[in-house]
Length: 183
Image 1 (cartoon, rainbow, N blue to C red):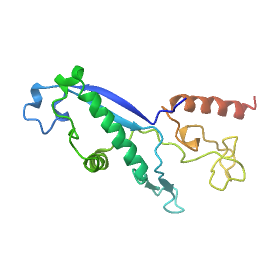
Image 2: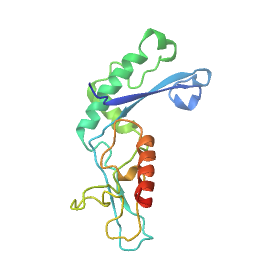
Image 3: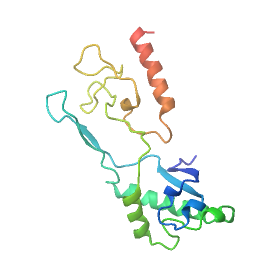
Image 4: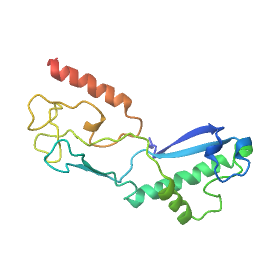
């Protein structure tokens, strides 16, 4: 069975601030189609700034650092443009951004300039085998080298799943309860 690579988020907008370049936007409404990359290849880092626990961590999300992510979003935007140009949406799709005749390079630049995240970050405290030097947690969700501390949320997942993270996060919490109570 083929796996999904992106998800469309469709919203109907009546707020003129969505259309800053449209002169009569206050009298208009429209449709926004967002394209979500379900498994980005770009990988960021979270590192300690110092030994002082009060210092903020050094966070580099490295968004769109892998060209494959930009290419996938260009493909998704092209599909979204086809949907927006369909007769059923025509009354709300007078100003398609990026324009239908935009080149792939222009669409890619739009992706780089306008991309946002959906806050499904994972992997900052990944779980792994005891001998895995990159894993912060052991298979029982215990923080290596710290007595009595476990982590039980989406940060333990080594990789992003192809969907929303709430269900696996609930399961991780349920499993952590079993591990703590030794069921």
